[in-house]
View (cartoon, rainbow, N blue to C red):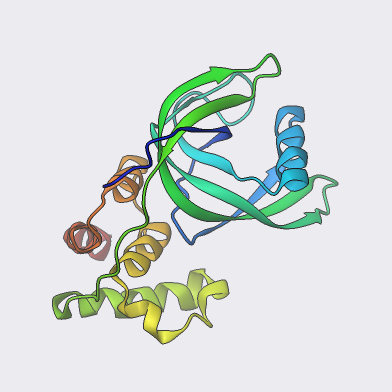
Amino acid sequence: MAAQTHLIDLPLFPLGTVLYPGGQLPLRIFEPRYLDMVRECARTGSPFGVCLILQGHEVGEPAMPAAVGTLARITDFHNREDGLLGILAEGGQRFRVARTRVRSDGLVRGEVDLWADESAHMVPVEFALLQSILERLIETMAPHWRSAPRHLYDDASWLGFRLAELLPLHDDERQRMLELTDPVRRLGELRDILPRFQKA
């Protein structure tokens, strides 16, 4: 995977989930360090980075983030019924963290290498079953994707990332799906995992 030669600096939000390119991530913001981060991103239009937590917790002491994460851009704000700030972020490019530092307020910032977007691949015919499975998952679990154009189901990257979001994968499997750079290989690994869910 080709990476840009220069590093960009951005705030990192370690979470107990994986954000994929094109994915949607609703977040509840209440810690001062993240309220400040959201204000900064909203003011400048800049993204923050979402990384899976490898060690630690979302709240409290700074957590250790995975080395590969995803840019997140805020697309919506709302005040929740519990009085907290809610945001909706959308996943963009993936990145690899070169180094991190922790600010005095506990916010982790990272210098990251952005990854190029995956090249377009049509879904091979042997993975047609995965398209049908995704349709069923979206119908029951992801109503925001119900109006997705049909041609997206033929895009191997989109299909793989949406399946990785919605299937009940383990965290290490979710992270692997993010780190794979061959969209057809990702579909193959997801297909190989499916029998585990059918036995459940």
